[in-house]
Length: 303
Image: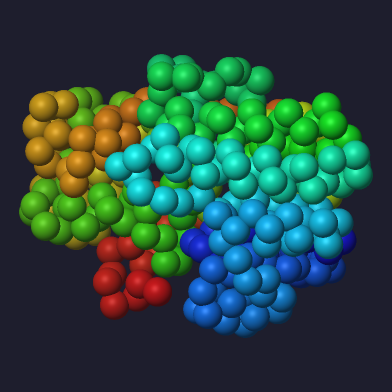
């Protein structure tokens, strides 16, 4: 299969591109810069110049492919409505290019769209007032194409996709612990944090492209980790005290109110349906092992 990929040069994208190529697919990747084009080329993919706002480039890439994988997402995080609009417009452009073809179209969301408080499944509805509600419009835009001759599906990634070079939530948490001299959690720290290793997530994307039925919602999540355990693992690794913060204290401790809300969010999700549908079984190290033994705690190892 010839796959057109957006976001292939990002944090998770290179692992997905490598997984697709190793499985015998060919990949063309959207590249908005020379650096992105070089990264894609080094992986064995063909760069395709353009950006999420270059709708003609998106359309051309999709029309020339046997399937599309959309992972790119960005913009100004102080303006989530604009990010949502850009993502939805890109998804609609890609999907329209595939309409009536029966080709696969896999788009990306995140499990933080789900309501808090109990383990949510792939069949549960997202929370329109939730922490990542700005991603819901993109989900719906993609899934709508299932009724228009496209094998459309959505992969919701865990908020932490860990592995070498991760610069997301856990890296920010480690940096905050270093700067403040303490590793913190909120309240009793029992809130659960979904996580998946990058290489395991890459397999979900490949399997979705190869065989997920139209209209599928999938969860790329290997485990739900108590946040206190994350803070304790960081504290041991950095030899720092581990402390509990109130929500008010957390608002001043972390880099932004959004981060404080995210770190206190109890958002466990199930991936049972995804595992059964795709035959997926996570095989890589878990988050706590990756924190303790990976590069999170060692700045000189970061890439």
